[in-house]
Length: 369
Image: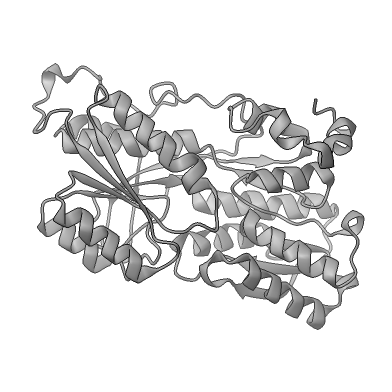
């Protein structure tokens, strides 16, 4: 996989695909032969509701972009599986039966969804894996550079701890074992942590559930001792919330929490960063990912193969298919120092969203007004 340089800050990430360097071919369709008009339907399947990003960011951006690309004639059909493989299979079968023109799939279980991807292929419906790499004959993959996400998280921990000390004990709370991204996040983090710290306890978290992450953290505290934990690698923000609850339940004050990582820049996590409870999160500019996926889906349906291929900049392998065209979007480490230059500059949140009454004093302390 191509490596992408880490952005130190995200200075107003452009929502324009052309501006992001996504499109490498002319948008003039005169040299193409679209197989369909703008009257198309794109199915959008999201995996779970624990993470708020899917309903708040990904799908609305995809829906709006598809409409703009099709002169408001293109439609989207949305479904969220709420972490259920069976439910997602049913939702995907419904879309196949309804003969949607393309499916953007964020799989609950990347392996178990493969037969449904095969069914879509047999029905002539292209499937683009979104955010998580699904198995089966998918046509393309649009996501973030997931190994880089883990590297950013791991590097944040080593930077927070300062001088290298292999005796520093770290707890790793990883994501769901059914999500291939989780393994990439972990691998990236280990690239930074190996040889620098001691991984005293590590856990995989079914369904990315904060309650399970909280239970894992409680076990780690019992095993290591609350005062002996130098930092906690949390694969995402929702789990970080559960981890903090476990630490506080063990008697660790909110002002004395170890550095804790996260991912997704959820509003509650950004607020915890402001207050000092969470050290960092990985900001993944959703507009870049969601718009790239929408562009790919519309181009694929309309038969603009050359333009679709120009959209892709990488190749990636799944366990069942090699050289899948992929668009990988870069990520940003978000800390107290660059909130304004990331989520606020990109219009994800307003200062008033973050600096509610509870966080007003903490916002003032870091100059966030």
